[in-house]
Length: 428
Ligand code: EPU
Image (tube, rainbow, N blue to C red; front, side):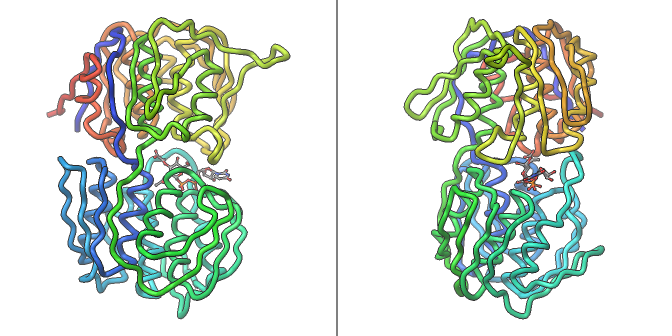
């Protein structure tokens, strides 16, 4: 077990580059099962979730070589003969459910344990199976989950939710179905767009990328490809928020600035200005950070929604940032049932947060935070608490950092590079 020791109060300064998007890499790892030819992924972060997914693929018989320092992974699935994925590690990550669509496409059948992941809500998988049933898949839900499709047949499918992983699973199966499949109410997050781009390089025909209507013309086996994974906008948003919360100035480089309009807009409601430069975003020091009420003077609100709404994975981070801004704001998690439960830890640090119900919290700022011993309950809350600790007076000890390391590579080293007083200690 490891902990972070954070001495707060130092404004962050410097330049940083985000790594590839975790939630793009994970379905891409599953997508390599759609071909016997090698696939090389670049800009892959060295994080636990990636290592777990690669380990599962290796267990299926794939050849996997992860050159972590170069952030490159080479995968060849020609040795995969196994449609059963019953390794307990499946239950450690949510993204393992993506092997469902990929194994089904490869073998016409699959047996897999239920996925795991952070405890942030109900996280059902119904949408995945309802959508795939329309392509001719029959699913028997149990432990393990078993499914088969004598033939995957293209169909028009109206998804009941704009689910990210359900969209990825649909794509992984539809690219091998006969005929045309249309997915309405598809997720269109940048990582789904990037998955579509990889599948396109592998020979798939997908139209409507970036919209909520995806049209897939199914084909035979795909071919090999090489792909540079696009940057993680959650990492970018985290570093910008950390800079603002500590009163520092940080420039995040190598970003596709077009993906950040919503994030910039929501941060501006908190009075945090994020400037756009070619290929870079920056927060400058000494901002007033005054929360803007609505035009008719009512409570400001930041809510998360499927893309192009404000990302759910940045909502806890926005909440922590709001504790350092002047005024009050409603933070509304419309998607997850229990992601806001981490606010008790912030309250212990001195924040004034009123949890109205599991989905809504009102933050009253600014409040001086004080360093405390805190436990990270999940990945994004963990990062939000690191930001709180960086902004706080005194020393904080953050436990359960294995959650944070599921999604952020070398967070300690990279924050040290921005001047943070943070170290990682392994507990005996
Ligand atoms: N939801 C709705 N209405 C919708 C769409 C979603 O209420 O129209 C709810 C769902 O019921 C669910 C939640 O929102 O409770 C998220 O739904 P989704 O199915 O999209 O989530 P997911 O596919 O299981 C992925 C990411 C999560 C990220 C969510 C939302 C992966 C492996 N996981 O999960 O990432 O929070 O999308 O963007 O891609 C993380 O990286 O920390 C993480 C949890």
